[in-house]
Length: 418
Image 1 (cartoon, one colour):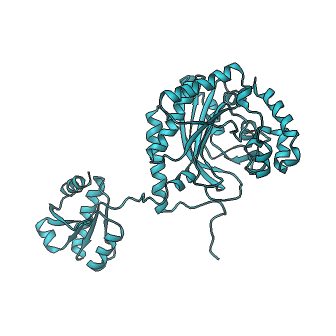
Image 2: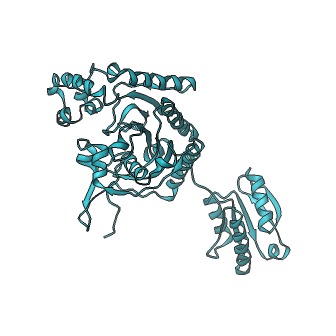
Image 3: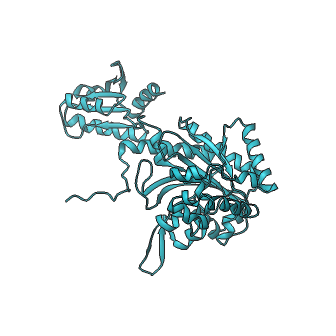
């Protein structure tokens, strides 16, 4: 019996990996242009890290984490999200001492035990950013503009930016009391999960997708109406900065986040093309998280992009990299000359393929077409003796003579390419 992949853990095959590289390369360009540096942290951390940062009462900690005891009797967990691990590294290595303002980005797999469905898997991938050391709403606006710039860079204009404010430890407790009173009057309409959340995490009820809960929370009091003066001014400033750069956004007063550490500005990039999995990127401020994890009392803000969901939005576009040149040969002696030419072209960055099996010329040219090579060349005895060959442009059948040296062929391909 053949061994297959674990349910919810997917292979990224060559035809799809080009799409992922396209997404990742765009993210690197945009983030590094904005002054961000890459950080790489382990996929496994001490379980305590996620309990303290995400919150014991969240669905992630209660239901979804891959947690087990290792051989040293330590409780360890495969990371369910990226921020906690990055902040652990930030504190442990005292990055705040190197620069009061730190801008970091990361790419990699996350793990949650959920029911696999379109765009949501048990091993999924995120691209995220974190900014620490800045209270100013200017930082909020910058990363929101950067997030919008990323989607523009990869050619997607459909996801829309939604923003909200969740207040701070000074104003949110009062709002929570008001919300709980409202929800208790509709307790019978709430699902079992939301009845439990009413004492542990009542804000999450506003985000429940169960129809009866959505109906029950219509008209619920808004956090925006209960912000303290500082939070209100902060949120207004974020909006002002976004308007000054013509960034299109919508205020969504029902938006909440599934993690306990968020404060003030929260946001999502939302699409209508993926069914219930509408958020393709999300984030917000976490001004108390760093001190909560034992670090200095400095603010932070960040977001994460769901790579699988973005890949789905890119549709059926072809992201493969076809060869610049396919070399067909007539015999063993010519294959040796072709191999030398191919090696030189590889060293010059020219994508080149060759026949490995001594197949007929017809079969070789059929493979050149299958690979969608831009050029092909047939090397026989005369070409080896003369040091010249005709290079055929596969798109229109036109041909150009060139000396059979890597430098000359690379120039020919480059001219036609650019």
